[in-house]
Amino acid sequence: MNRPLRKYVGWVATLVALVMLLSGCDLSLRSLPYPGPARGDTFTLTGEFANALNLPTSARVKWQGLSVGEVTSVKAADYRAVVAMKLSEKAQIPADVQAQIRLSSPMGESFVELLPPDDDQTGTATSTDLLKQGDKIPLTATNAAPDVNNL
Image 1: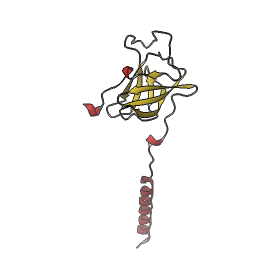
Image 2 (image 1 turned 30 degrees about the vertical axis):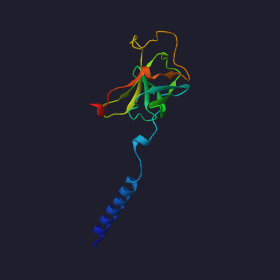
Image 3 (image 1 turned 180 degrees about the horizontal axis):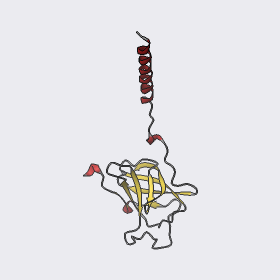
């Protein structure tokens, strides 16, 4: 074998070995943690959902289009999904809020959208009661938006 051909074969072999080594690793953007929207002082609340739509932990929790927290756990209990969320204490969210699991796009990530009560679409609290540590959003105040699988 002549010298240029040996050099070429060496580079190809090295490149193939490197690709094989890296492809065996589980490296992806999904394995990186989200930058936390709930920085600083936080509180925890839970929501009961009939269906969690493959809601992942670390999913965003949004209020009026802004990320105010993240999902910390999703567990099944009594044929319901119990979703624990960590929210920023800076978020002023009414205690009678509703929650909906949505998709960012038809094939996108799931997130929890906190919505104002039905009688108040402005997003301002109808009373002075705000969400606080340990509050629960009942099943009657939650739902899941339609997803691609249901169409």
